[in-house]
Image (cartoon, one colour):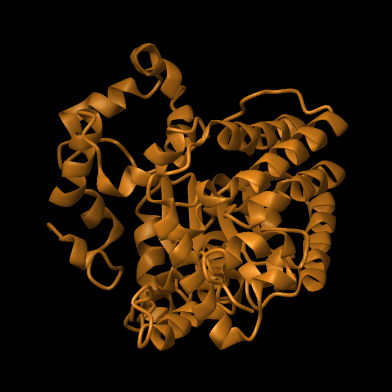
Length: 409
């Protein structure tokens, strides 16, 4: 079976059929010949700033570091698997890691998210696309995981994959989805959970008790806790959350971790032009609560929100604030790619802090910065026209900068 990109849906193809398709065959061959794959662009973008990308983390599982790729590849424990059949359709490499999008059902409309990943944001984009070209109209999505028959089919596929070690289940807001729990419970019922690690991400608006009854049945359970700031700025970015409620749910998750040693928690952050100015406070929270952070990526879309467009004087202040929090907490410079190692929490925090310090000190202002800054004002005005809020209520330091590009509130 040879599905095209337009057929890559659970309704149309099984996991194994897709894995052995001509489409995936090409991906494997491209990877082996170092052809740049378009969907890998975010990782290459992160690599250019020397941040641990998803690509780097996956290579580490094969004992390969990007900075020493050629030598590590020759000595990798998985070298024979990589080279087996040269990526042929009937490859003998077994699936060990899955990321599955269950739905786009979400109660949040985060400004840096995409409408295909949030039903609520999708509705905002539909409204704004009628008057602002910067936004676009997306169709409503039929989420396969809302169909019990397709969930049953997915489980049947999983049972045929005895080599699976890690399954990352995403939404929308995953913890709202019945399918998330039914899949986890089915893995337990079929006796597969004790060799599988489950990962998911939540926006910290809900802490279902059902989670506590699942985690101990799995080899490990990883939950990414999405937050951008410990201030009210989080309300604006991850609209319509309330930071006091978010911090309360976060505290409950931390308590849950104490009772369940196989539960791994990390903050999931996607710093943007605004939140980067306050990242020192988030780093301090990490130090105070012994929790790491993983960056989803260096934000590159929506492009107007990129950190590179921060005004120079605020960038300089941010650098000083990060240096202060590094000094205060004695965060020795170290690069850690294995961010989920429970014995390296402090090292990972240090790696996160220094990576953003390096990013700010090394980055150059793009030549088309003015265009993106004007787009930023249009972008903010669009959302604020629907939400009745103002970025300056949460980030007053940006007033002079934004008004210089036409922002009025």
